[in-house]
Picture 1 (cartoon, helix red, strand yellow):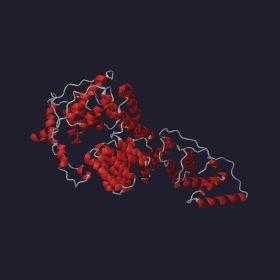
Picture 2 (cartoon, helix red, strand yellow; picture 1 turned 45 degrees about the vertical axis):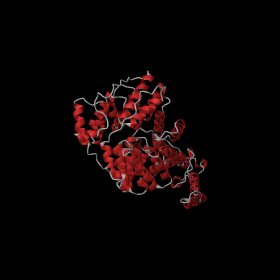
Picture 3 (cartoon, helix red, strand yellow; picture 1 turned 30 degrees about the vertical axis):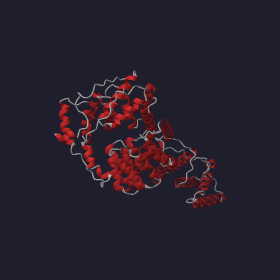
Picture 4 (cartoon, one colour; picture 1 turned 120 degrees about the vertical axis):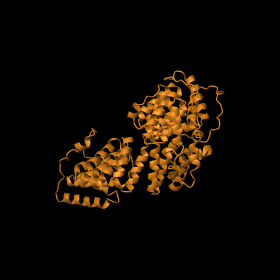
Length: 551
């Protein structure tokens, strides 16, 4: 089996690697640094550059030690993966390249399986065996092998990362038999971030800072990523800006920083970041993604897609590039390419809610509600407290005429904190369709209260829609003062100005005829019991004093 042997760039026998024992605490930081430097050298010798860099960076944050024992890296032999990439012609884009298979994988599996059964594999050999199994979609077997690799060589961060990518939920994590080592704390913090368990992740990272890793730029960047995941944009931007001051040549996670700048439409800052990273290293995937985000913000979507493709040529398994390229294809109305890009992202990481959400949006454009309902559900499972997923689910249920489910989704979206301030409006329109006037009025009242209480200047049709409905509602209830106030607000908007004027004339005419306003206050508004099934407390809303509201 000479072919498969030449495809293995790492040693697979236990005799090559010295035994590295690790304790489960952080009492001896000097010993931890020695272990990190040792594993950085071992991984660098085997071409595992990401693990080597991670270990070296973490070691750098600890008190200084002499580095004389580190050996220069030997040349790495060509692998089956390298041959696969070289044999893929450049005329194929990244979407087609993902379909090219490494023909050496099955031979590698057979050979490594025999060595595994004979207990001849060291920690690096087990890691390689796990990667082969993962590439062959043998997920359960791959998880078992990666867990074994963490026991044999707990200092190898690459094995922990591969294991992290295969874990889909917290329940799955509980059943893993992980080694009791200080590396486990870094793994748990990372997996909690990936599983959107942000509070637990931040607590883990704070503990690591407290025990001596306060100067670790890796931990600081992970904390910024955690705040990015819960959409605390200001906090995340602040941490990234501070990190840039501490380590201006850092490239890792700068694509996430650029996502935040993109969301805030900070063109000049994003342009500076892109130019700065180009000067440092223009052949890094993060640099390509940052430049792609810059062009996307300038609405140059073809150029943006080109840079995301470059990123994928550098690393075909780079999750962010697949997702961002899917977004660009959506902007260019190329739905088939967008679907393919999002599916590749899910192949890389099934926990990427953005890819599931993007697939839902794509099938929504294709008017396939059952498909988009499935994908939005998957996105919601990954982000249960994200109002955008809930609003999208509600719209799907509405199109499928499942109105009860739609109402639950819209109310839940409001209860968890509606990012786009649209859930109440959609819920109100749903009540309008069902002729539930009091519930619709309640939703519109709360919507108006919310948009003015947060100090936003809202310039879209929904504000005028709310005032128009409330004017008509109060008019039917013979509450002339409230109806007149809402009608006056309608006159401030082009689309409702004429209706507002007509209603004011009717109110004036009725008053001149001696028609008096009712003295009875409408029944206090409550959400129906069916919407409170999720134990979300219902909110009592009294009629709004609109005279104090200035649009």
